[in-house]
Length: 491
Image (cartoon, rainbow, N blue to C red):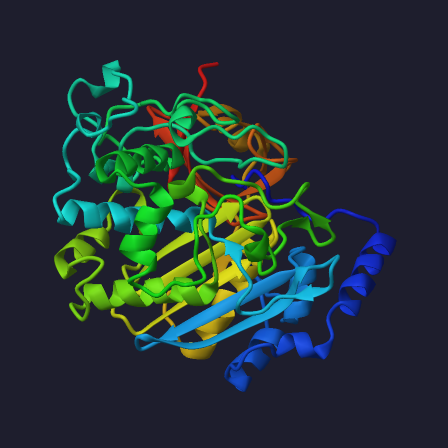
């Protein structure tokens, strides 16, 4: 629900039928076998997808991949699967460009969105290893073209690269919208002071005193790395990470060249509605600017697994890799997220018209990359990931089965009110007949929160958890998805 761009399909049965017919016409059988892959696995993915969660007593019947792509309004899906240090297979389904009737292939380029941060993190840590960059020093000591303004929050502890990488620096700006055609695009430094369509990057709480995801922090990191290396960010990452890992299809070109565009997927708001004007341009390269393929991202996953096991010594040493993969606040290491069960490193990405996800097991045995070109792609790749886990026996991907409890209108009313989410917006809750109804300034429409405990609720649409905090019997805040803390406004 906190994804601002996600849109559920709304339309009449006639409209849906029209879309089904149009989409099916673009899906000849040949599109479903573009790359070699285990036939049994592909057959299972194409025939047996289920939602990643459901309510007790309402287990859904399996549907086909084609059906779920329609439900989630996502034209293309591309996957790479990793086994024992190798890319076992790649496969693509659907349309890279619906209007042009261009099928997706394993060579189709997608925006990696926030997965880009993993490459910024690895590059930064390589600069730390060679002594060019301080991991724990004040970033202002090495920034040359710009300085983070002093504030009351920075009197006790400065902002450091370590804190930025782990999203613990107390910095603002959650993410970036990108820029459409004809927009004036500010440079990397001007972005930090709020030029363009994003807010200035500033401290909103003391560094080191809590987790808060910040794309703005990675924009500071981009400028910092350019300053200390005297290189442009794209070239720096290419030399230190992309080239050593043989990621030949990956680039931070924003925008893409004419030749690269021939391989690139079109991003879609819905099945037949591309992002207006084409793919957004993201000058925030470190936070969101990478174009790539699942196979190239799989090479990155394998390299991390090998460095973690001491089987590879570059781009990072084993010791540095292990520090990168140490779980901290918010489930983050120094760049990657670490799964709650301690089995995987992972990261997702969300740009306009693109959703993607990668993970690798910490023991190095398996992993996967899933990339889509639709705003509904996160739900689709979640279902495909669960289906892959069933086929391969990967632990940690069991569906969630929710059991709502009954709660009176009076009991629900205790949680009603306005909640301020720092740097994001306002969440408003009101009591319904048997649930809380949520609206906000950062997602469209209403969503229903069902109670599953005295202070725990879940989003009926997106299964995110909401945990309310009480002080002397009064609700003071709510934690969303275990990561975002929203403070209740005083009534």
